[in-house]
Length: 640
Image 1: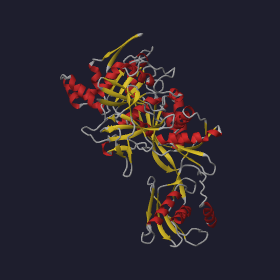
Image 2 (image 1 turned 60 degrees about the horizontal axis):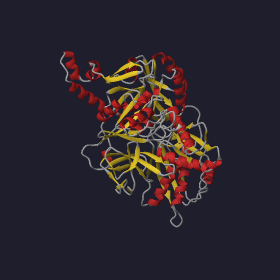
Image 3 (image 1 turned 90 degrees about the vertical axis):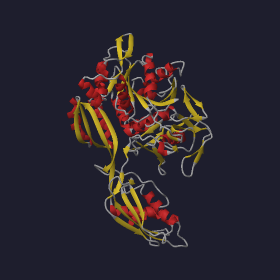
Image 4 (image 1 turned 180 degrees about the horizontal axis):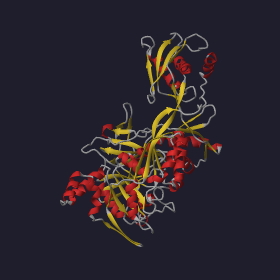
């Protein structure tokens, strides 16, 4: 049986949930249609999902059409950052991108299509709501060509005689223009007046569709099940599972982690090759194995227990060990699809409960949410007992608040977020603290050198002390202490982009322990940093702005107000494309301003560029206390 993992993507109110229900109903997977208005659909059950079109709770459902199984996978993504969208799309074999016949191409549509192109995912356009009055399909086609891609092929004709709408196959030769123009041999035949074989055109169409460079367009009204059957037939025939041929060896990857209402942990695994069986013992690392004791697969709109999960399918396992992106089996069999690694969280804030008795519930909820979201981290300040959240963007924070309220029934208060800075040494420096020289209370001598490296290098550590002189346990303790010290620089931010060398060490054999070296090393590092000085680095983003040409002047001249640097300007199809760089702390205001003055027509796509020297005044954050070394730190501080 062919198995297809499909994503349905759309802007708000384009009809994504309604189309999912229609596909399930038309295929016979469900006996009754759910209603978005009544809250009876299989997906989008939370208020924020319905209001913003953001998928919060991933739901994998499926249907079968003849000998093809289609898993419909909701594709969550924080739309204010592309890397998270890429991650959520990586499991798909194909996508259906909805366009509202009435609303046309929206900003969110363009963000989603951009991500689909980057990932080279075969994509079908489905123009929904064609039964509404006042729609102009030729105008929608023109808008699609101008704002999405000129490489579309309209596969159907629509007879618009409301209330009697009919959709038929498009047999006009003009529909093949995009196919012919993209192939030199076909274009030469066309120019010389030679006849085409339909099989030639269809073969070229299929090749380019599979490559993600040609996009068929279909039509319908999901609410009235119009065009749904034709769409199902196209999905079943055009999409193929991205599994390596002739491979029986197991390869699967975790793409989602979820907790049930009873706090049971489930992992969602996409099987790329081989077969997973109940009671299989799978090695997941050099030292660790897991045994499959229970498994479910999506079947006809429900999840059912199963003894096997075949290549191409989705399997849900109750498991407390597997992590997001964990691999089961042979990693080399994963498809080679472009995937942007997850960036570090760029923002942080504090979160608190409105009712003190809910604090433990909040901590448990954050543990579960962060388990499935690599872009969310939290810790509890040991002095103030505040809960500190690190995250990526404002939409992500909206999602977290909605989950807390609707799933965990916790009302939370969140302060205005700040950017996460980093520190980098300005110059080379050395510092040594000697044993039995006050105020050193530890039975250890440690000497460290530090020097700056190019931005983006990270922290490099090297020991220049011989193992014959200082044994491995002491050496390990020094490295652990240095890495701990890098967590907080002179201004309280993480230290990066430097090389730290262990230059000198001394111990007294009767009394010295690894703990002496572990506790002394961060103090030595801090003193070395004081001699070197540090600069603050802040996260920068690449941005691409798409806006109607009449807004060029405003968009360009507003950029300096937000510390944005525009590096290129392009005009295409009455649209301006601006590319540049901007500090992450400014992007939300710039994006909001763009949306406002373009009346929602402007689109801003962002990706993390990296860290650069911060502009403006230095921003400090309080140091996290450590009762075992803080007194000694202050004593050395007085000596400086």
